Image (cartoon, rainbow over all chains, first blue to last red; front, side, top):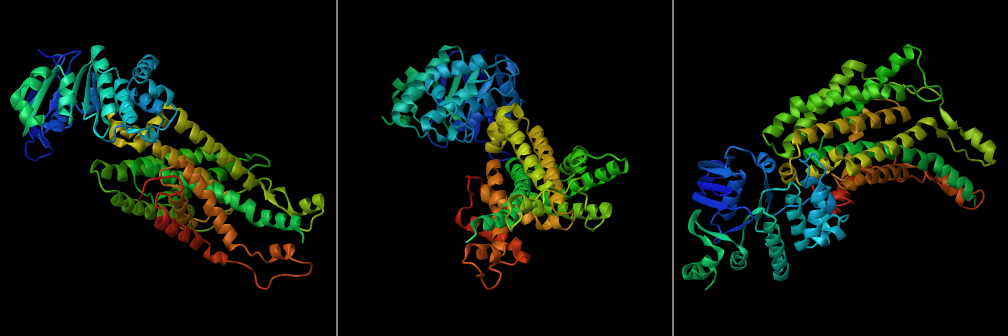
Length: 235
Length: 336
């Protein structure tokens, strides 16, 4: 079984209509899984379902064999999930270091090591540690957001469109960092608008359409698949 | 021209009283801004919370005085303060438990909280009148002056005297100490940072494992402490009048909004700006200008912008002007 095994998820917000139907997403340790698809395909919703921000009517979410389907998001953080929301994902009025400290809020042990690791991963944050995070550039803010989520030492890191609104150069750099994080053995689940670039670094890709799995394959295979290229990658 | 006498006159009637008043307003505004930052509503019951805290301090002061306890030259009320704070903290937490929590669970709009807080305000006002009565209470004891106007005149040989009351100095020292501790708490401690994080981005704070109930509880405790101290200092400086606290709500709100609501530094800034505006605008400058003009000359009329009866209008004008011109306040706060 996969490290994250979210299978047959069906559900929507509140009592509204189902947004995802029989949707399955899996991630292995140290691998990057990417969810792509057209606008309104339920990509972010699928990720929120994995994180427990959605009431599932059917399906189950298993992390490392443990059934976490009924856990609240906060509890999922404690069992090893890290989540980086797409927007409002930093504390703008607090310094970079305080943002990271808040990421480690649930930890009672000494987190200086992790802090050092985050600074090693994102050296620019070390230089700006005492600056309010709201004063940073878009790319740096995303680094703070990812760094904050890493402070709990998650086993699964979930990123909701981490490259939304950043320049192509910053995007490439961010993807490099994400690859680096995956190499440390963390499983990464990412929703991406920039499908082509994301699939290039992905071990596995999930193409969602109308809340359902349309294609599931390795990143390379999806990039090579003519139908996927034509429908979702612009030729 | 007699600049020295003019300055002493100004200090005596404007600068010293306004500084003490500003410190009291700042402490009040800090409480309002804190509740707004954490619970996201304008707490109209804050004035009555100050009144309640002061009442508790007065009752404890009387008890201490009956037992023959005194602080010598300092007011006994300072010794009674911890008791008053404890009672007020319990009261604030009970109010939250039985009134505001209901709306929190329902995720009500901020305006509904605000209206509920008006209800709390009236209930508290009634309760206070039942317990201590509607009359003025003077509870300042100990020495009255650090330096009297006469001593100052004899010391300096000037015509004008500068009187500094013990309560004014206590007000400023206590206010500064309280602010220092508050900022240390918010900036340096884990709990304080959690409060700031919650105020900044509630969803992300929850994601980070910050317990919202704890943050809310902490906000009420700090607010009750601030309110009791602010009310007691105000009561020591003037006298305790139960009805005054509904009026003082206006300058306090003006201060919080002027400074940028949700911003503690802004609340302090706003408190002093409102206090200085109020006092400078309602002060009669006749004598002051007479000192500055040629010998034997004095302006006709009082040279007063506004009668002191209208002092609350100053806060009101500031409030309206800020909301029109810069609704975020001096330090970019939240927009109501």
